[in-house]
Image 1 (cartoon, rainbow, N blue to C red):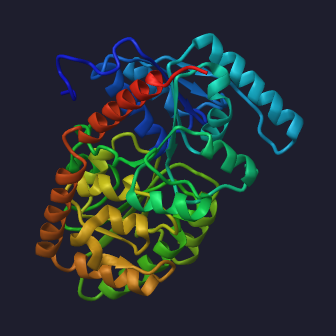
Image 2 (image 1 turned 180 degrees about the horizontal axis):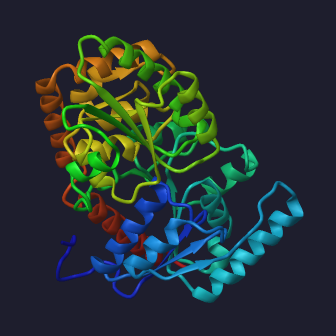
Image 3 (image 1 turned 60 degrees about the horizontal axis):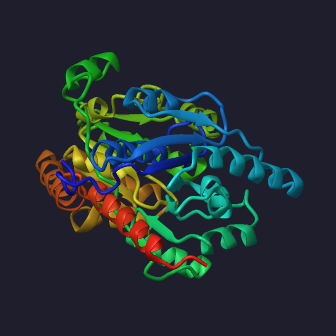
Length: 394
């Protein structure tokens, strides 16, 4: 389904997606899904350019979608001369591709593209703000200059627009909030298969957290809370299991060591990076998203789309994600006791889980389903291109 089924908005346009690399996170997955829509729904020619060539699952997913993927490895280590060389290399490589639109995601692709898009010869550059974390890798003056040189900024949540204004002084009609679409694929394996594989009984209540093992996702607080959950339910039940899904992003060994120290070996399953997200969610009864800072995380919205209640930290991004139905189950950051209370409340009350999960699914259906975000993005690109091309040349 497209915004204008008989009139593709980007017919013949070349859209270059710039990503950090092949490692697949939520931002990269969202970019690839948008690329598929712009190609199939709006007639664009799409390609992906990665700023490193370290092997990951992103290239494989792009290949499954039939999207060309090219690497432009550029070092970015703080040395000014090397960074200038990287910018020149990126510019020359992109000029050969002659994109009409450059669409970047995450900090380094945003900054590199923001500094070079005019030299590349693109008509439009779109800065996609995927977090509210800021950056220490990139000089702040350079970051601010690139951001302010950008004609179109898209964030994944309204509070991120406020963050950009407060942190970098960037606001105005060229800054837009567009929620990501939540369209879950059919599960590869069903609930019973997943539970059998993980040695989990059908009568056990399963909580899952889908987040790469980065310190900011705060698996530490969740494990400390889970120790309390297990202890509180030991006598009155039901039995519970926690599934932690994601790749190592610098913190997995520490999290596993903490699980060992807390004697949670039988109560937690580390399931690695999961492609069958829908299957994992089908095997779960509730989701947890314990993060310090977040824009609108898929670890909240995808479980909601699957009809699961979400227990999360009470930060602006997660609060915006869960909406009013989920607010009673948010806990202050780094507060294991409060997180425990919300989890135990849902574990003990199946009817409450069903009710909250159904309300959350309705939030997603009203806000992020049916491809409306994709259509909004296509319309925004088309309008921005038309506006820039109407401007008199200098």
